[in-house]
Amino acid sequence: MLTGLCPQLGRTERVRNCSSPEFSKTLQLEYHFETVQKLRFGIYDIDNKTPALGDDDFLGGAECSLGQIVSSQVLTLPLMLKPGKPAGQGTITNLTGTYLSISGSLVYLLAGCVLRVHQALLLRAKPFDSPAPQGIQGIVDAYRQALPQVRLYGPTNFAPIINHVARFAAQAAHQGTASQYFVLLLLTDGAVTDVEATREAVVRASNLPMSVIIVGVGGADFEAMEQLDADGGPLHTRSGQAAARDIVQFVPYRRFQNAPREALAQTVLAEVPTQLVSYFRAQGWAPLKPLPPSAKGPAQAPQA
Image (cartoon, rainbow, N blue to C red):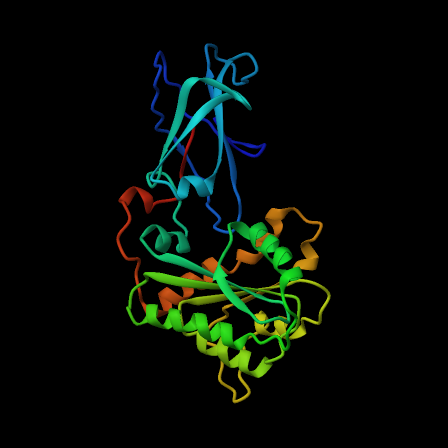
């Protein structure tokens, strides 16, 4: 039996008199890049004809996220009777690629495209570029740890760091393959001061395999960042040059201070899959390598 959080998503066929059953029945399940989709697998010894499971023996269960399955060639999980109590030596194994729905961005990632994330903290202090911490909460924690240690410095300029990452994206674009895509995460407590230079940097970067995510922390005036987001229409430079595509996502952190952690992560990453696919398709670049035929069909996932 497979469930996502509480609702039951489906059940496999029954396998009789077998201590190591292999299940073949599948069900449709859509994978969302930007959302943590939690799954729970349950194994039961069914010895009657009633559909309810309350009168059947529970042999063990396992929990994971759909993202773990997607990112693993083979994912084996120990069966647990309850937290901290293993169900003997029992395990459940999911074979990746034989049952998953392949969304546009996932096609490229599974085919070998590398998603490179750059993080920059701009605190009205000198910006610095560093490898991204683990997860959105790790980025927020890094911000909180860095704030007391920085020497305040103005103004807050976005263009230099955007141009810096854009140089790496340009090098990747020259390869002419869907091998790399860059995401720049800007965490700032101040409004952008080099507005025109930033507009020009974003418009230039819109022709590259690159996205920009801006998280505004605090109560500053973020109107300029809303304009960079350009959800209402293409971003233009002062000279009238339009962005080739929308590559900026602005998220005010204050709207998520009391929200579940997953809500912030989902909003921050919401536009990246579409932006990645739109760029590679506009260039006419197919995924680096073909996927197995079984991974190209409708969204499917294993059941237990």
